[in-house]
Length: 228
Ligand code: ADP
Ligand code: ADP
Image 1 (spheres, helix red, strand yellow):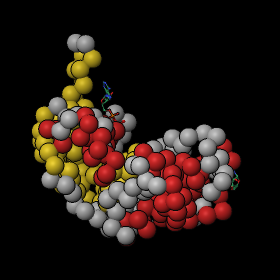
Image 2 (cartoon, protein in one colour; image 1 turned 60 degrees about the horizontal axis):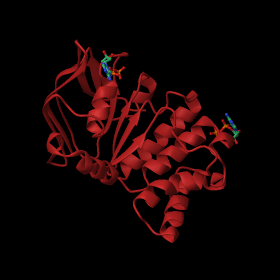
Image 3 (cartoon, helix red, strand yellow; image 1 turned 90 degrees about the vertical axis):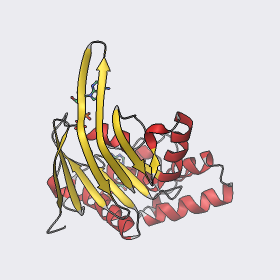
Image 4 (cartoon, helix red, strand yellow; image 1 turned 120 degrees about the vertical axis):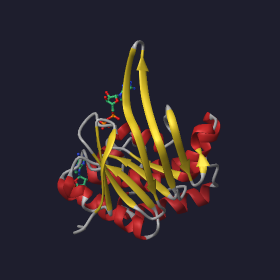
């Protein structure tokens, strides 16, 4: 599903160059569940932004389902994101003063789905993440764990084969974090490929594989042995 070859990313701010990713090669197959770890500044977010077709590589190659992403226009990238990728963020990024249901319906509206379908699909997804009795709650009426579950339901609206989550449990207490990981496991068992960034080994151990970055280099790539 994901093939990265000799990927380099250099940020240039005036005269200052930062080599954020140095020479990364990595393959992630359909159905994998990968944690990206590494200390602050190691290149994790840069890598996720490139995988998410939100930022461009400086050199090398990125194939997503065989599509050479570096050769695509901004418009094509936007379409690829909408079709293939669900995004989950540390800070949830829900629309305030808007019900859980409407938050989940939003990507379906952008995808020009009919109202009946939108409602039905959003209800189904909120039920799937355990929020059947919270569909008319606003984000500020929900706990962090509940908000993140709404965000996951929203990420799933257009049935993407790939979920990218940057520190999805970073703002949650450990119980809510575990609940979020249980949802990801369930989705992964249904065939969704999942890649998360995390600082916490306890969270990473719910995944099947841990990839570690340091100073823009890939320094570790291991299968999780005693998976939680
Ligand atoms: P992480 O997510 O692991 O904390 P990042 O990918 O955010 O790491 O950052 C990797 C390196 O690239 C860091 O040295 C960071 O300062 C630098 N960096 C990230 N974004 C930019 C940017 N927009 N402009 C310049 N340097 C950046
Ligand atoms: P969870 O079921 O995700 O474990 P909690 O036990 O943290 O949720 O919260 C129980 C209830 O308290 C939630 O259903 C929510 O309505 C309310 N609640 C919790 N945290 C907040 C918050 N920060 N703001 C508003 N309401 C909250």
